Length: 444
Image (cartoon, rainbow, N blue to C red; front, side, top):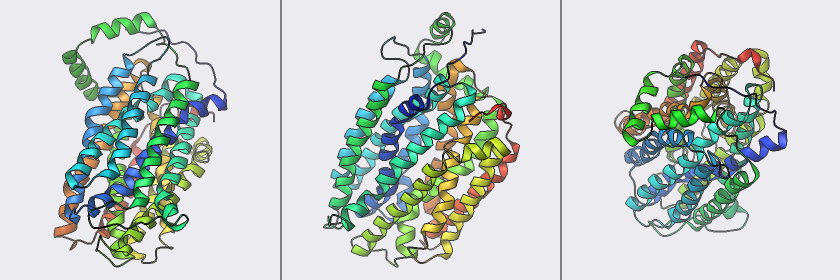
């Protein structure tokens, strides 16, 4: 059934900032998770080859939650509360509670359970934010919209990643504790994360309005046609097998990209502790210092991501979005692989520059390309389905990397960085197959 597509009003930069600011808090929480959860697991006694399995909660919750939330948000509309904002709010409240509880974990199963809750809650807020750009911005502003999100993602992650290091090295708060106890510096970082997550998302909720569906009559008919749990599942399944061609092409690129990033998030702490600090003793101050330095490394790549967020659209305007993404991923892959050869903590900041470029592009270009290939009335649903190709490689990495690290690489986690780097280079090369339907229409 056809729908009447009304022209979208061009938003001011301040309006784009307000609608994107919630991502500052979302990524604040996400960055604390990425930089510290493996550290928490190991502090609570997790063995090196079991860390990946413990992390499997993150991709599985994304696999289950994101398409469902996307599907539901497409079918939600209230004149006052809007379409996506109710999901932002609920996810923010749940995420903030989980962030506060996570560092209270005293046993491994508690931390693993809270990772499930935290990641599911983050996904409830995060997925509708992607569709939000497609809802509110015309094609000519979408690259700028996703770039603005990427800026706040980078800014939030910079501060969050650096917090444990700041607490210890600036304020003198201990980064060690008794065996099986989370250090105070990590605890305080998570408490602040819970506050920042909630307040940032509330800023977007209260400063940004939403457009009703383009054709309310068509939308109501579609909603009634697919009403009910079973019909919803059928609709989701059908959508997966009828996804647009551009989405399928991007999915292949996403698989190798996110295999790389997940390898980095899971194993960087243990890899740097072994390769640069020469320790595997999780109760030692040296190991905790390595954990703090990983936060600094992650701060660098997220900082580069924030800086390049508005530079990449300029490059994309000249050479196209897919070639911009290709170059960024290849540089990031080289950086990730080079960590194998570096044993100085300070020098390890250099490859993070390349990783940051790849991260910035990953958060901007695929979504900008995809938004131009999706039907407007299914924007949230397809954005959720697209995330299958983020979580599937993460599940794959969580399932196999522990085996490879233990059985083939003698528990040397640094080889996970090599695997991730090679995977990212492959993703970059595969960008050549992607068709960008409206690349030539970008106006930044």
